[in-house]
Length: 68
Image (cartoon, rainbow, N blue to C red; front, side, top):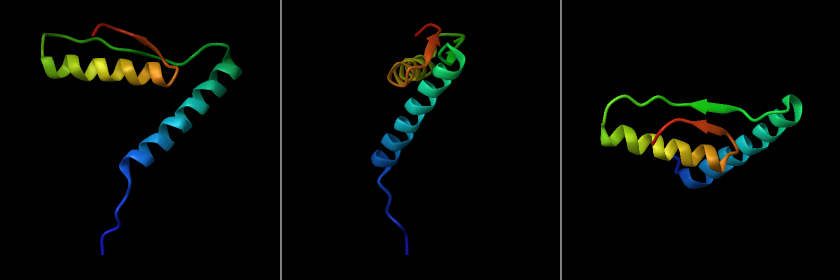
């Protein structure tokens, strides 16, 4: 029998863990973790992915550097 999972709930739990870990990282190191992105070309799917990544970084207090 298959087990049904709540993906939105699991995602929210993981995001809360990430927020706590980034806060701890900043407390211990004096700076926030970061992510740099280099996008090559004009692929709309890639650009959409980078925009989503930028939004996720902002929600989780991770510095983002790149174009979208």
